[in-house]
Length: 116
Length: 113
Image (cartoon, rainbow over all chains, first blue to last red; front, side, top):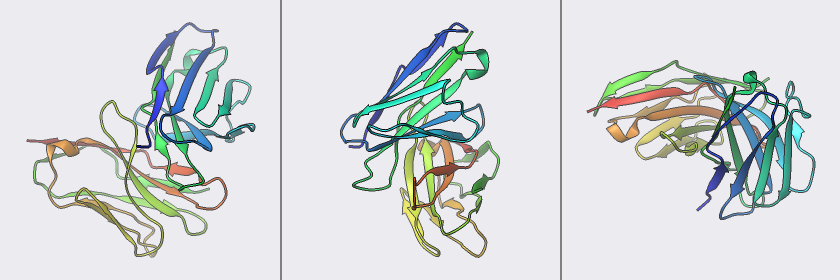
């Protein structure tokens, strides 16, 4: 149980375009979802926290107009990278938590974004 | 702010060797501590956790003890296997509020047969 999927697993896009990444909790209701960014050989950096039905809370230094997060249902959150640039190339990872049951976060496998 | 520091990798060991991956933390309050493992092509999985000082988390032969006096949570295993090859992340979380995870930089472990 407690499976989180991400789609796509990898994507290549041109500079200036927008890319949407989906994060789904497959067998539980995710009251809270988190989005992380991971640079090569570095740690996961939390970008934002989203609760179903409310606006995401962004970490300091993360541009909310560039990284649009929507958590419209208890099983789906999306991250849209708008007007992508090469410096946005990274590994994006989501996690989900059923806060009513436990504080444990379940992680998706990640999405590799390459902006050319 | 809160932070986690792990020993730098990569770490390469032979099968059946003893493993230690060091982890120290800086935090206000009394965080919970975690070790996550990321196998190739998979998402992070919780390996073990400890929620208060002197607690020992254990799973799959791995152990880590929450040492408040040294602010450490070192990961150990007595005899590693090839299947333990993965990236290991130490993390902390304050159980209050948003309960966000703060990760160390990860340590890549390779076990040779």
